[in-house]
Amino acid sequence: MKIASWMLLLFGAVLASPQKPNILIILTDDQDLHMNSMDYMPLVKVGGVMNKIPYVRYADESQKYITDEGVTLQNHYCTVAVCCPSRATLWTGHAAHNTNVTDVIPPYGGWPKVVQRGWNDNYLPVWLQKAGYNTYYTGKLWNYLHTDNYNRPPINGFNGSEILIDPWTYQYYEPHLTRNGRPPQSYSGQYSTDLIKQKALGFLEEAVSHQAPWFLTAAPIGPHAEIVVNRRDHSIDTTFPQAAQRHAHLFNDYKIPRDSSFNAKTLGAVSWIKSLQELNDTVIGYNYEFQRARLRALQAVDELVEALVQKLDDEGVLNNTYIFYTTDNGFHISQHRMVPGKSCGYETDIHIPLVVRGPGIEKSVTLDAVTSHIDIAPTILSLVGTPKQLDGKVIPLTGPTSHNFTSEHAAVEFWGYGDTEGDFATGKQLNNTYKGLRLTGQGYSLYYSVWCTNEVEYYDIKQDPGQMNNLASPASNQSDYILFNRPLSQVIPRLNALLMVLKTCKVTNLEGALDASYDQFFRSQPLVTYSACEMGYIRSAEGTSRWNVYDGTKESSVDSEWHPLHYGNDWSLFT
Image (cartoon, rainbow, N blue to C red):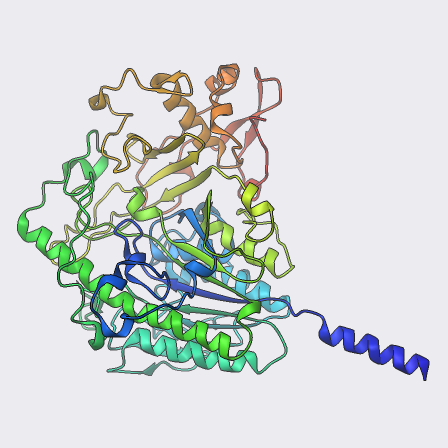
């Protein structure tokens, strides 16, 4: 009897043991941070400008769903500013030059490239399934997933899925979804974001009916532009994103913030950007309406957030669920004289929202360390107790370590065309391949890049938040510039060397890296250069694959060769 009682107690303790946390990701498409789109989403972020707008739905809104309930990663970056490559880094935890998914269509990107590189069998949903999770997905997954290839091969990693299919992916009132690999079904006339909300709620209903923990992604297309593909000649028409009818009347007085970069010429601009002309009033008026349409499209996303959080609460699982809200890349409209688009290394394009709430996360706090999309997969795997060595680092979202977390850099890269959209699009801009380094730390905020034309950019964002003065250009006339007691002539070569080193290493502290005692080491470091402007990652076009690794003496180095598997090793050169 005593043994039986002991066994019952043990069995009860096992049943009462806490379940692994659930994971919900809400992933928007092309959402800007620098035109303040998050302030127009009161259900994500209470206290935004929507509370001041006479809109009955939100007049007395006091719900606090994500931002006020969690942590805002205020220095979060995508490492490649276009959707498919960015999503590949998010789902794999690897840098774009390691995924080698560097475009939205073949031969360098899209679903066929994902399959060719083996990522359909080796990414976050598959890893979570192996860890005992039921996994679900609805919305946009990969570009170039269309009627001819959506099940060749079948998409791996999901217990249940309803995925948008090309050529209708970006048509707000013409969504087509494939459910669990079956032939696509048309939902003509239904609003895409509302449909994704409905499908996500259905998957939540299924998920909570099982004992296993679950992972769900809801990936609406808002606020991406509407794209209609002509099935006859494959021509593409890009127009304003479409709003749900209930939101079509909003924001008629909105204007894009006129910061220092608005319709302004960048001193020392490089590549195609240096030839941009001032936008006239007609184009600016069009750009205002383009961004108004984007904000309207985000309102249904905001309602999706509310519905999912309320469903979690109703089911009693909200307190055991981590919710990630982010986007794939940012967006520019009128900054640096550019028409609507992305694909640049400017803050508008790479600096993006990331907000996380969940068990053990403090409420309404910010984390100022630099994070990027390659960090999300390793962070989620750590939260669920199945860590994995990837290129990214684990962001300590819970506990006292989150306050002590320091990270100063994000490596940025791009291949291919400069993207332009809308009625005044200027076509695909050539020579938009570059590697960049975003550095933020105590007392400094910098961006450095080398383009495939071998032109160089360097912006001191602390002094120049609009990135209007390229200090690396002779036109800037900044001979008196000093950073950590080092002149510009020392800073720029050092940053180039750091960009080379970051193919394999993590920099712990920029100020330490600029110490004069390392001059000999950096003088021997090869530079990041290009021999051609390729449309995808072709290693032979990107300069030497050999670099020097610091050996600890501050005066000498050892030669090594780059290999993708080296990326992410914590070889701290400067401590």
